[in-house]
Amino acid sequence: MGTTDARTEGTRQMWGLGDYTGLAGRLMPASQALLERVEPVAGRRVLDVAAGTGNAAWLAAERGARVTACDLSPRMVQLGRERTGPRVEWLEANAEELPLPDSGFDVALSAFGVIFVPRPEVALAQLRRVLVPGGVLALTAWTSDGVMARMNDALRPFLPPSPTEGPDPLAWGREAQVRSWLAEGFTRVEVQQRALPWHFDSPARMTAFLEKHSPVHVALGHMVGERAREMFAALERMASPDGGPVRLEAEYLLVSAVAA
Image (cartoon, rainbow, N blue to C red; front, side, top):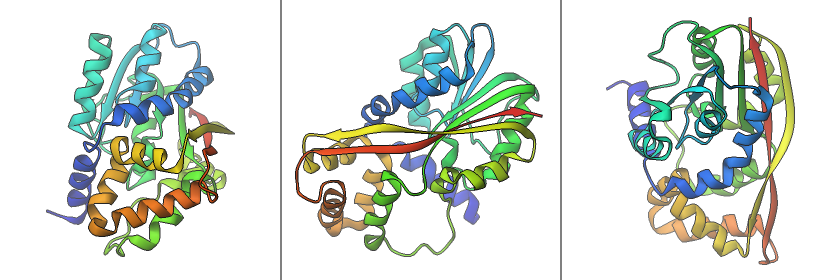
């Protein structure tokens, strides 16, 4: 198995860890913002890419769209099907190799999903291919200097160096970078900064939530083994230096563009 294939398989397995439904609930307002950006969707063909359990897909279907959702993880696809029922067509698919026809969709959405692909230019070329000319792409991405970036900084000392360069989800949160990627095949790029409340009664409640509901943090806990408690304690100090309730605002970019 090549490096790319091994990385894809590892990603597929990782996103099946934990109970993602809890995290999906916290992220729902960002999907609501996506739908507001692309309304109206009634009667339109909508694709939710790297859909997780289908926040955006569910909202689009509720508004009368004809929705297809895809995710790399079989577990996410299973949960998504259970959640949306037959109103959404679900596919197990890699965002870099979408098994979908050219010009098959009017709208493509991705809520904190496509940002995890190894090759952004490849995924965006696929999204341009499946959109009709004039179709709309909208996605959300954590900013490169916000709460999620600071969480990454707190985790980094505990992680072994990677033998290969992996994807950088935070690159999507740099406006200049995402505009550069979208310059190929898209026009009328709009970027807004938004924030999601990242509130917990205590730092310990936050890390307990992550250890249960975040596939990334579940995987990291397994990776570091005996140092997991130390690692999560570092996250707690970052989130609340005085040990009080966590009251952070997780900044993200809401990005939209029109297929040329």
